[in-house]
Length: 424
Image (cartoon, rainbow, N blue to C red):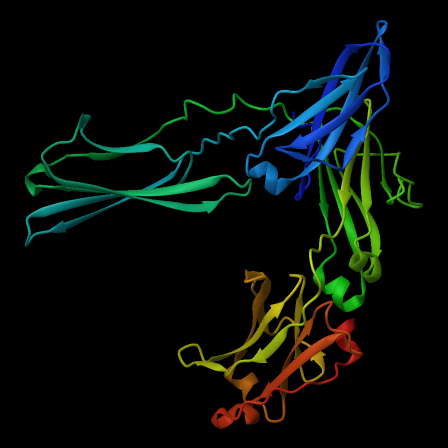
């Protein structure tokens, strides 16, 4: 069964064996035909002349969300007992839509049309019906419904939208006539009956790409939310399961806590393991969530290009685009500079999330300028790309352009050194 806190990348599963003696017991975990690692087994506990044993395993959230099946095996004196299959239960979310309506009259076609829009509802199964003064569907010429799958909400649940068009004869529009759009959501008949809320939710946030790639150091943050009971102690452990000095908190612990740990670029690059450990007053064993930067291949240097500027005559703006592609792994940071200074709040910048393509990644970063900013004489605009594969003295690739160099499509891509100001 799923137990304890979860992270963005992993889910912790637990297995309990009871009423055995003597105390010698070993656990193993499988996913299909594969044996799992990252197993924690706690010492057997004596209770009423018999023992109970507990084991936990961390599995990837990707496998868990894909509804792969996991099993726990307990071996006691040569006898193997296998747990029931463990699979992520169906998550049922019910959310009512935002309903809006509108009306139009086509005198030429002698038609009256009513529109009903249902936005951001869940689950998908639904029905939209029309009523006229309490009686369903009067003299209807046509009724059309469309459906679309929309965004995810803040909890990751899929939300849906639908629209219904009702066309009636104008003779139905008698004085005082009322047409009503009624949305009926339908609950799924299957799925999970619900899950018990974990006593503690734990989420680990890694260092920002700017900090780790530009400043060569960053911070790992362990976010702790207590849903039931009280915390006793929180701290960080290293890969040898040793408490890390200066990270222990035992006094004044609140329902929400953050535990911050410094990490150097070398530690991050090498993939060192760190564990956020949370001890709860009502739970026998501590929760441990691992942080480890995952990397699955050799680093590949990005190709960086400054694209020709795009002028927006209507808004009197110019957009510069920096194309960064063919790099691996995905962690990359793009900074924009005006001459030798990092851009401030006077400038608008945006960078896409990394997109995977044939085993490597690409991003686009844009700087939006006013016409006056763009046409300043002698001003150079640069994008600086930081990635672990870049090993020159500035640890970056820079591409630059200015109004004079861009004139008449005379685009220049230059490698430049970056001022220390960019690293601040």
